[in-house]
Length: 179
Image 1: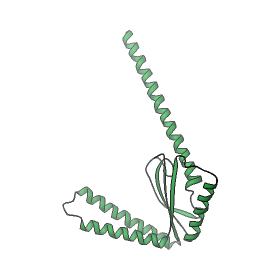
Image 2: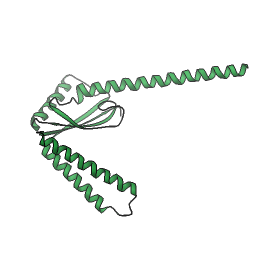
Image 3: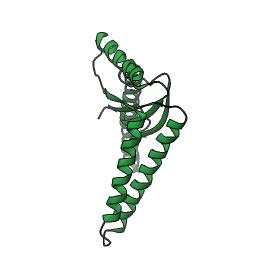
Image 4: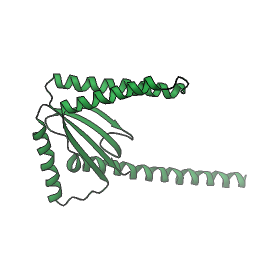
């Protein structure tokens, strides 16, 4: 009976220690995620005030926080206005002496017509690649390429719809935090 009580006590100690370690690591991850989201939103990649988000791709818990995020926005404002907004934001951030910290980001602004041309070219090149794929290619490779073609076509159609709605500029954000 003594051995059983000792084994139970060891097991309880192990469970408490493992639970504490998991809670500690989770708290660190949560704090890093919150800090990343704050830095990206307020300093490194603020959303354009007159923009509409049309696509978000991220690899961890949520966009524009811990991990990598690609965010695409369109705006009815002209290319030069959007570009000047981000130039002013970057200069203000540098003047404030903000350091990179955990977060890092880039943004690029494009005239929407140019972005549509790029999307059309990508779609066309993927269609050609699919047509030229050897017939003995693995089925999974062919399916993956077909999915890429569908995604490229959907992206092209999204951009065209945005142009029809009056959008004139595409803003592409990349942010990375803690990676």
